[in-house]
Length: 136
Ligand code: NI
Image (cartoon, rainbow, N blue to C red; front, side, top):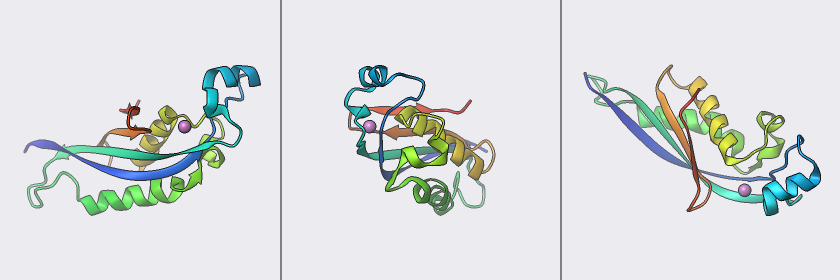
């Protein structure tokens, strides 16, 4: 049987402030510029999830879309949508850059989906910036 990939996009609105406890206040301002503003700012992220695997003989599908939607809804959107990422326990020890959001979403999802099925998570932060994480 052939394998194939199924990708789906989700919207996630959240705010963050880029600030590293490992850097001085001055180094934070230099490194992150206006993203270090104490009041933070928001993004309408697009989270793209790609799942791979064998096309099921009976259903003709790689994964049921409603199964994926449910997993993403429960483990990612309910957790992060309309929140300040800095306050989530998963970001207490890492700067909520979009690189780290991408890695974190991957880790949360890979634990909630059938083993070995998540290929990558891509996060679009703006029209011009995107990040991808393929796991370990
Ligand atoms: Ni930002």
